Image (cartoon, rainbow, N blue to C red):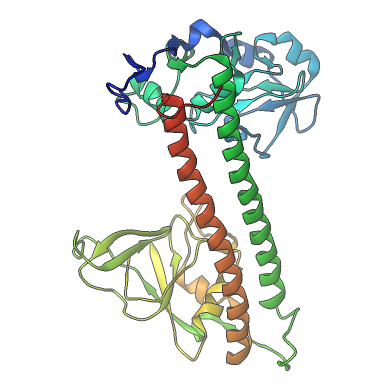
Length: 395
């Protein structure tokens, strides 16, 4: 329960916490119409294709009030009309009920979209604004409602019957509009930086392909590059189980295939190295410049000769590691296979120059990512204050 406003003048206690006196608490089913694509409709009628009249949205196509362009599928307009309960119209709100729960989307066009399975179509009544409802469905207050019906379930699955019982604080319509406007502006700012990040990553990838292949050279360098097997420039070692070195007060980071996840009381390697997944995530090299422990699902690569490790990290990041996968289930790399891969090898001064340029690009990317993380945290705080009425807006 939200107690931020407890005993404040002008507030009242409700089942969702302390809210302004002029606000109400309603059940979602009482102020909206909620429908889904029925199982029998899907099994009996559903046919989708790579092209068509109506875009059939799936859970992974729903972001933070935006459509994510991923593996789009379509259905015919005639099929969409036949399944009218799940056909989306302007002003409807889409909410994923299985999997990645916590996103929502307001539909802004008529006769263009349809929901696939595991999505809810929520049509607001005149007492609630679609944009306000969308922000609520993406908030921690909605997550609490989800938890009410999934307290013992690790994978949330929101049934329509449960969704109709969700409790939502309802400000006056004008205040709903203002709250939604403020939060929407925050979303747009986040999206602006995410677009910038995407562009920077694209530019860096193009730069990597040019500089690390030798297609683009710096004017001060000339001559042909050699090609060397990885085994001739690094020693490839297996990581080890961390069980005997785990220490909650340890200072040595323990790396898995996705980064640091625990700490140890001693190091497996005290030299700068590159970590590479042996099983699981095999396409995410990690540069480590301080002593570390690597778990047994990783390799760690230590230079044998005079190599700029930052350059090597960039070069190995360009390798299509999944091409070398040797397992049909969990992706897996073999040390012998890795050791035989040949890569173009510039002179050490040219390696350093390439690494300097690409490291600068990485710094720009990191700066924008940190800004995005900060904006997301700021928006979460803003949502908590606005949706609880802790901070009021002029309506």
